[in-house]
Length: 436
Image (cartoon, rainbow, N blue to C red; front, side):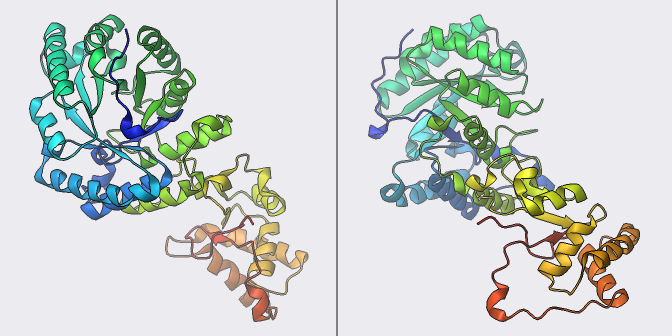
């Protein structure tokens, strides 16, 4: 089967990897918004997120169909205006509306100025039985007629079709539908809607579709119900998939989908540099921090591009990273905007880091023997701290009150030269171990 649509993407040549970021569609379905009494992204949030994604290098952004609500319609217009302001500086970014195979959704998206339609309908037995109730032949007939009409009336639109729940859909059923609509679309989606896919099943499905539709681009949408969203996305890319759905921090329905920064980070580590064209990797951590603030939380510890991934609490680790952070940091997170490491004072800290902290950070007169004594007292008492207490304050109190340490006098002109700083478990002091 071939695709005959001569669509030119406004003279844009797709890259080896194109992210379709769906933070403002899929991500808006995350329960995290409710957990933090946020409930929805307001228009100001959405504009900042879209601008950040465009600057980061994303060329395709998925939004809700504008007829979801009057607010979504107004937000679509505001986002489009924000996109248009950046075209001269950053080039064209395509706004794609996530729509049902329904004329009302299509009309609303077209009226709002969407560049493309991401059409979907459930094809699995479960979806056909318990979601929309249509049999396969009805789906084929209706989808073909709707897409044929849409293509004829709006030849400029990017049209993608996804059989929802593709990995619980029999291969023959999926191809039965895709065969009929291939002449009208530029891309087929393979959504793992409920997170059942595994890397072998992804590789097999991509192989089948690439062989059957050699001129059709494929798109993946992988949920994380089994913790496989990232590895499934990587497997799909390695088998020739060009388009991958992501969100910031991987948020989405239930356990979410693939994190955009985690995906690009792993492609970099795997030396798949040709897939990173046009993405500004050093903005990875800043965009994660920005988005986490929208959720009223910190960047999650399971997100690879995070300060947590360069934070050390164990004494052995702390001693080693004072010499070289590469001892316990194997990957180049500095290339992704995490330019610092953090050492946390706490019950696992050894005398080496306590000596370093008191001498190099707080400018006390202290030798190694005294630091060892202070560390012994600190370790006895630190387990009695309450959530309102601070390990840093406890250590300083012990050093001054019981050991009588006095400060070195550091001329003002040298104070800014310190490049290694530390933090305690409450993040009360500066973040540490800056890389130059």
